[in-house]
Length: 210
Length: 233
Image 1 (tube, chains in turn orange, purple):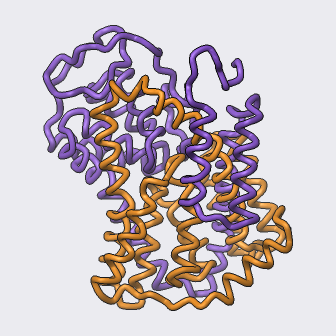
Image 2: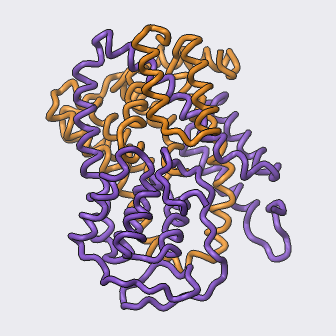
């Protein structure tokens, strides 16, 4: 159903299921710091407004640390997109999933920790960039970075889109709705909340399922 | 220019066309001493009110976040920061958008950091960030707790299956949104295709991918006198 080579898809699914995955629960501060370190390391790779990290988030929270099932990841992504505010707050939800088995207290703590960790490095870099912008603006580094990383971001965004589509894993009507929403996002100025509301009704009626 | 129209736009990824700041205009000396991170404006745009205090910055960003509850965060922040509170000129704001898109991090959050840094450096950045995130993040936490408590209910799961299908369509559209600007640059398309194949077929992780492909692409696009690797517009 997806434009991915079947063998690669098979390998990916197999790796996802067979890989020995020890659920790492955030039931002590050491784990929490480890998770925060993981997100901090990714922060500076959030090109293109942060969406380039979505595949990596899936890898970390589903395959590496087993905080969430793939379905839950898709749910949380949709939740973060539907909720007001920057959709990059998804990281907070991932952190919440990591701490949830230990109770709501840990869930909230690791949610705040994860969000703080993903934002801190990029924020500090941004502050430096703002203060030095006059010098940076015409620097060849700036120009090369902007022009060079643009096409790579483009490729990553396509890969991320396919990854999310694969993670959503809905039936054929669901896939048709996904493709339709994609076209409508590009062709109209309608708020995506409408698409999600209509699709939610279709799901409730049982037209879309997974 | 999409954002200049100040209409709330649905959701802004980095996909809006980059704002056009006039290149090579002489730097403008700021009216007050704090290091203004911009020099995009040729004419000295008058800033009518005094720079916001930390408290005003926080409240302003809170207002931006609250106004944008239906979407269109960037447009709302322009309306409030530039038009209503007149903290900075439109050129300065657009420069901020350029910087926010260029550097890593979510665009809207980087924009809040820019506005905060503009007036109060690192302290301002953190205050603006807190103001921008306080309400949406609290709401998201409530939603998240509700999700983890109730997601196994069949009715909830069925509705979510539909919402997820729509969200997947939104994710799929991200690449197409910026595809247009590379249409006449075959090297860029080749780079993008190679990146796509590396990630989907060979499962190369993001960090090594960017660390290898990034410098190569930067070398190719390094500005050289007389040689333009960019297609003529």
